[in-house]
Length: 168
Image (tube, rainbow, N blue to C red; front, side, top):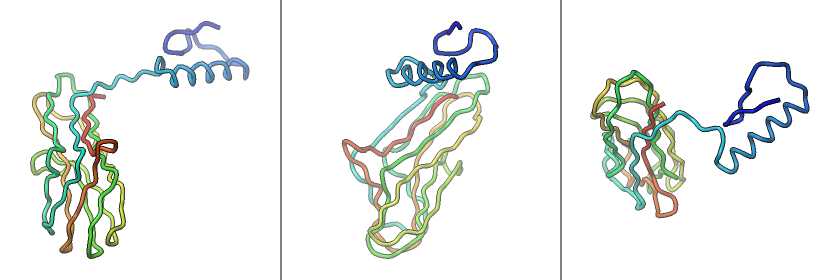
């Protein structure tokens, strides 16, 4: 049996259960020590906040300050993956519908919507995968609520809220 790096088959063959166990074990070790299973993803941009963002606006999208990133998409037509994340979002007074979205300017790329009770935290995770044109693009996280509340996107030094753009 011969392996290549990262651990992939050097040629096709039928595997015994012992060989499969070795393959899995070697790949797990390589993954744990950071030497294996590399991806072809390239980080195009990343921005984070480490202090909470709040707004009292309701009924309209509000850009989360500094959770926006401008990237240059290379030629080639590959997809990008945009991930927006915050440890939690919550409102202080009235139960409401809470919407978080990834946008490019005013164009909605993806959103999540959930009902929240006052002071009940919900994690925010949104992913959009698309094939944009080559060139400069700015992606951002926006939030919206449908009641009069203080809406908070939580973040801290050890638990940032962020937006990440990867060329996949």
